[in-house]
Image (tube, rainbow, N blue to C red; front, top):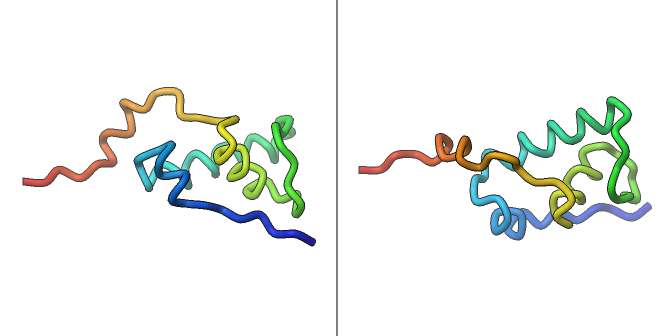
Length: 76
């Protein structure tokens, strides 16, 4: 069985909010578990692996990135 390789640095280039990535993947995995059709296949067929692969390949994205600006800490 082959393993899905998650390239977190590449994901951060697409979504510059590191705390949003697990949220997006969890929401998509939940949808896949609720019988949503996957856009890609993964060797291990776990919903989380499929969601990460979909995010890496650009099949899923965040609709309103302005909401994510609250995740950036304020620095003084």
